[in-house]
Length: 236
Image 1 (tube, rainbow, N blue to C red):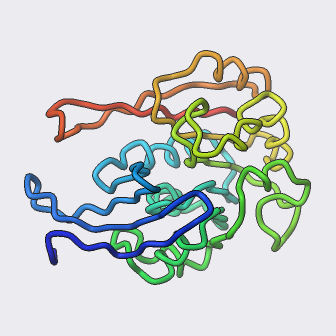
Image 2: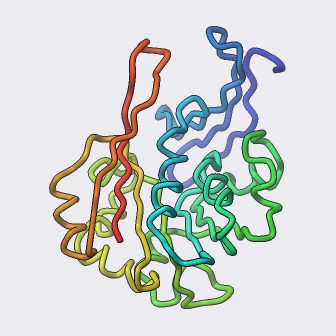
């Protein structure tokens, strides 16, 4: 632990001011890393249970002995790091719209994600995940048109609470069908959400995938002295 508070990086982006900061959480005696976009909190290293489960639940559904995986949204790196824990993962493409977030990882600013950027299985792809999901060429230009065994997404707050309204089409039946072009047969799509399970979104998933389930992830919240929940959708 160092100073009580430190702003590690700040950049103006097309979506607003993006900041990465480290602060001492006195009640726990630990350093906490937080990301803000303008005045809105995007993520915190205090609450990562669902980000980890996003990777673990999805990859547990895949039976292939070697896996090629896409993560949409790099953030603090917890989902990508959890994916790399699976020894079957041979390639991991992490698609991030903000170059600044990739820089944080390449510059080693995040202790819990040390080794992610340098792992030989990993490619950090600067691009718009949603645009790439609807494109024929796919997520990674090297090689193009590659298919994947799992596509994991943690970008918007939920299918209804979006960071950018241009993402809306992805969460429709047509958008989900376009995504399946990039999956191997038997592949898995998984999505993190900050909201409770959405029956309408599950219905849309069921029109595209053979199976779809919403997992409620419960974790302690020391601020409320109770528990909080996120949702992980898994469709295969």
